[in-house]
Image (tube, rainbow, N blue to C red):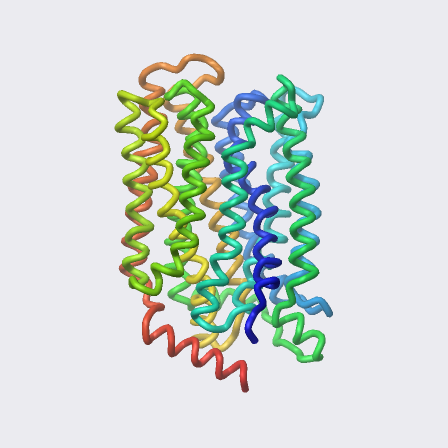
Length: 453
């Protein structure tokens, strides 16, 4: 059944609120903790890492729960709504400065951050799990996968361009109050956009529930087998982890780079706005490029473009760190590649699920999709840990002029390390990924025949 444009947009808009929520965490939580609340960077970096160790167990279990959910509304939509409401509430408390000091303050933010990660999992896994059940042809899948990514990239664009301005306006000189008000606004938008998705999008599991068709439940043993036996899932894990490490690390250091290295915090908005527009443009370009280039060629552009942009940023920044045209070009190169990767990995996720169904005989969307959520948060944690530990090693002290060695360390964190990782992602893809061309078409044909039967 061909999807209507209204259904596609209703699904995609759910990513707008979801990624507004994630973007404020990714872009600003680290600097909020260090420069506004006054937590030690080393502690914050380790908190991010510890929370993700827990997610290594929590996320796949959530995928298992979703795959075994049976309701009249399907298995995805109830969890999307429940997770959104819980996550929105936790987000508000995460950016609310309590009347605490010392160990109590550290404990409060530790609990809130871990709860934020857990509740985000509840809604994010079923959201992306629903995508493969909405589209069955390669053409529709390529086009459909771009829509939520465009909404998501728009969310990151809005946060990069306007968040700091809104913090100043809402806070009127009180940064803590500004962040708190911004978080509350995002929480409201998050709930509204999710309600649109839940009400207007019905996936195959919802139709099966209405028709009375029973789906086979997944055991824990079967879930572990799905994870271990799908070789393409392992390649997907490597690629997505590397991609998210690049984006999270460079994006997380960027605000420190422009505040302390370039000496003008406002340039951060210039960089992220240009980067986000480039990412959205790349998402529009992805289906077109996919028709004329092979997957490998598209992924080569996706992998090397960010490296060129980030290296250019630190090289030109040695002599002209505040040159706006150069900053814009570097931002465009950085996120044009990431936009193509977003499109490519969204298609990869659906293809890996189909491949697993043909190879293993069971279709476990949520278990496979749980890795996307886990990998995004794992990359965020590792990036946060690298930033926190890295800033500590290079001698960073919040809200003071930094030493030359500290400034050089920030350049390495934003440019050198992410560039190495993005090249590694291309190597992993070339060496391991095989779901393309006639081989992929045959897999999709088998999945279609199974559905018809």
